[in-house]
Image (cartoon, rainbow, N blue to C red; front, side):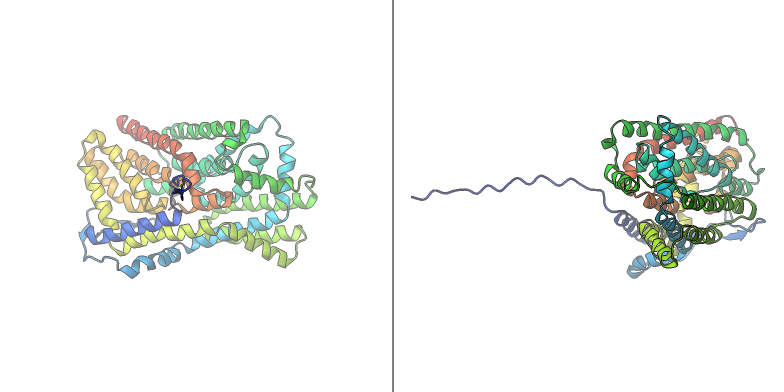
Length: 472
């Protein structure tokens, strides 16, 4: 007599949903933008060159254009076109990563980190407000963004050695710079350009913007210090525990290596390069091309004083580039979204529709409406000066019509332009910074989203206050 034995399959736990890879997210947006070129009417503004040599749109010149929906093949071509459009940023990212690859190979970073950590016992938390304020001022006064990326290579291992993690290190640079750039009081690339187009005195209304900067930066410092304190008490609470342990392990392998004269010479060259960078940006208006050349020169000089062979320098440069491949490619794919909207002639239509929506709002809400529009536009136009040239010629006369001061319109642009730069994958310098710190975009968003809500709320409050007091 045989018994029927029923086989019981082991229970398979349901798979936890994972957020898609950043390339999947970006390509999905490209698909949505491509479909939109079939649904959104094509249109455009006339453009002229103003007295400062900037190309700006002519308010009231919007007109319909023949529909130019993108073809199936053009969807895929947009990625290559986006990489062509952003080539200067992509190669800048590679060059910075390569140059710091030479610095890392010299052992100077590890030697300096171990030397500094011995002097910071019990005072680690002072690093966060001091360094974030420094980076905030560089963004608020000089408009620095991409230029601060090189600091990440130094600060991330430093904060890991004192008991924090790589998110804290990246936040000190990225969030500090972003807070200053967003709430800037004399950023020449955002405030200066927008006020020039709005025909109000450059850097006027500075006192109120300084107050807003202090509040905005204070909230950011509090958020980072709160997280850093948790990680310090229990390192396993870190969202990047494994990644930080890998960095710590690589530093620990050189624990007994002293901070030598060669290491000090390498850092002296780094310091000279950073001073030259700041001087060049302020005095001569340097941008990516000049800065990239400076960092190549810096990398070679560091290799020479570290007694590296030229082949070793080249290998270290390539290794440094490899670290940033993801961040650099994300920039190009993100620019593909902009290519689709421009080739489909719907970018100006979107702007025209948003401006009309603001004009239809009650006067009490019009300032907030402008702020919301600028926030939305920044997701597809990540350039601060580019967004100013696109939106301010329209928002300036609109502000006059709806009873919002031009200074408030500039403030709405300023906060709308800056806040999303610290979490959207279309922000090139931000993605490059994450790649350099070894942090995935998904983990960063998981960490920062409550602060982003705080930032958007503060931006809305600041714009409303400016509107209510008739900010001039």
